[in-house]
Length: 140
Image (tube, rainbow, N blue to C red):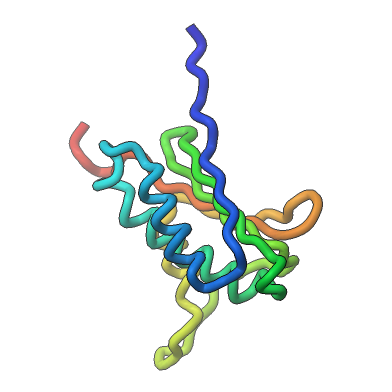
């Protein structure tokens, strides 16, 4: 019998700071119970960083813009896509040692097995990051 994949979880949040916490909680709650301990912290942190970046750099009209968050399992990973209506392409920065900002994508780069930035067909940008379902280097 054909193994039908799980339908991705999808949320849309207003471009407001409170949406960071709401998105983080939604992602953590959607994980299967047996994966929450293993993936919950990494995916929550990735969600916080990516939604915060989307709010800071990809939105401009708080009352109209939405941040879209999608989570789905595929190819041995849980994939997280955070999309905003902006056209900019985030890049890993070399932050000032005393600065308070500029470390978000460094953290994404460290936590994710792979990540990329993609333009959306109609409008906007998505940052997609994958976290492996199983840690490498452990006993099998």
